[in-house]
Image (cartoon, rainbow, N blue to C red; front, top):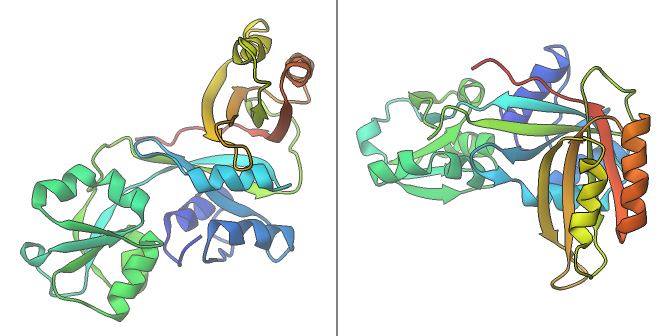
Length: 269
């Protein structure tokens, strides 16, 4: 999602290599459409950031789609403050970027009294600023975006925390075979009775299966009811994990497996 130079494009190149052809689309929903219609081979979807948290719309789309998670990618996000050539950092008043990027640089912006303005994409903010420069306006985007759109870097590494990693899912139509280190992502809903969540999670605990994520989200069609997104270490095809999933199916109102895939290794730094 976004323009050329977006962090999703960096994730594509990191995972697939320099020869891959990145295809930008306007929205997260368009990623799912492009893969489903076989206009592209895979999709790269940002799912959560170590500082700003989950990308809620991405999780909602996973629930609605039949696509599978085929891999995960951890990208070390390093934000740059970009502006047209000749701009002085002392002249900046407004900074534009995607809401997630603004959240990741919140303290940096507040300390300087700059006004954050959300736009649809980090690289899109850079592209629009290069096409229509405005006095006192800068953009937060990647170094790659600055190079593509001819903007100068006024400051680099401006994220509030050095451990600013974004997790991406590679979307496709297949389920990879078990790897040396696998993860499984799923979503489930509960019957409305005491202890239901405790019993569901017990299917994993009693088998010694490690959970790496648990997050609740409102069900769109049922007010004040929730679904739970869960990740665990292991592959759904392996016996111990398959047994846990069968136990979960018996206790939950519904279960949808989003994918079993090779677990990513955190980049150095």
